[in-house]
Length: 155
Image (cartoon, rainbow, N blue to C red; front, top):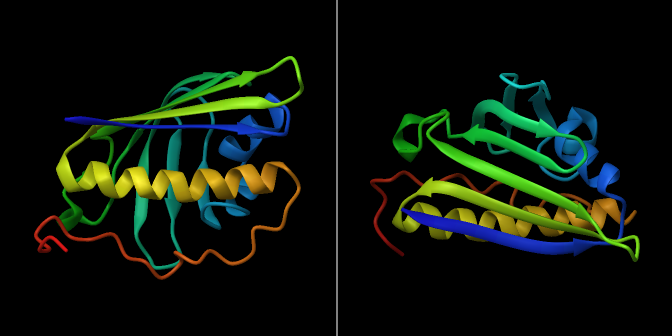
């Protein structure tokens, strides 16, 4: 198993960043418009990307506005990452200068899946950063990018 680790600094408050991850309307403005986020321990985490692939899991831990932990997987069976089979940990640390450090760790991925998610999280966290900083993120250039099947050949 590989760890996917992404870290970035956002010019926004920790509360703002937390809301972008947990409020379905805010989440829809940078990640996926069709989101069900019941931000309570045991609550559902589910979003569908415009290309139709759906992520789902459950919240394991919420410590507003500092920490979010949820299980994660794809509902499409051929992806090979079943719902709830991996874990995403997000630490949100407000800094003295008014910025916020965001660290995301995705555990439980293997091989190509880890590499693909590393790129995916980098892409979407940059969209989160821009949204948190008041920028219009526009249409997602990855909107039509389907999640590859685990049986797909290496490229």
